[in-house]
Length: 272
Image (cartoon, rainbow, N blue to C red):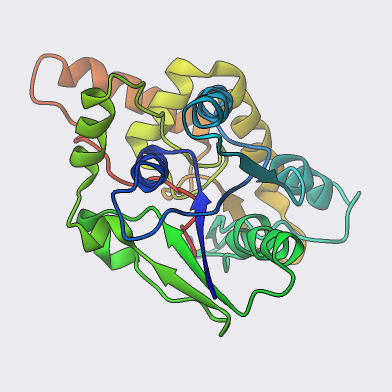
């Protein structure tokens, strides 16, 4: 028997995937949806998740399982300050103190905080499962993100791609059913943010942005790394970068939008 489970990020694509699946738009209806909480999503994601949990319970008598392996932000601070011996595995950008050469640290956070917690929970609720089809919320316009699982008992499935549904189709579907559209799902301190997303955090969640500044300033002397570490790809302090972004937005309001619409978000699959 093959079990069908959704890896839920509570962002646009994975939430649309869940709702379509529960409405029976695919060949089978998923039995479980699992949200792996890194403890560092934007506040809007948690608020939306609470609404979504109530909605699917009332409409479909379906329960979303929430799991966690820790708070990635707190774990990151604890490692830098020496309170923890385990690295959180965030892929910080690096800059050599002498030559200025830039690089990036190997990413481990997705596996530790997203992939493995979901797999452990599947083993917990379905201990005898030998075949699991894990549905991932990747849309047709993001096909390059498709990857198969590195374990034999899990097969990744991409139903949105099967139906050739793009992110805009997901948004249109929310509006067609008069449902709220999710905010973007991604850890606040993720170095892969676009400039537009950093600006969004600054403008909409000042507490979250202050937390990002705290981590950004703390990781300059990251344990085991001789180079300086940064959250932003330019290897500049994030609080300096945001000043330029604010100026750029003011200029863009008189010209063309300098921040094209984004399609990237974590959805829990940034490293599958």
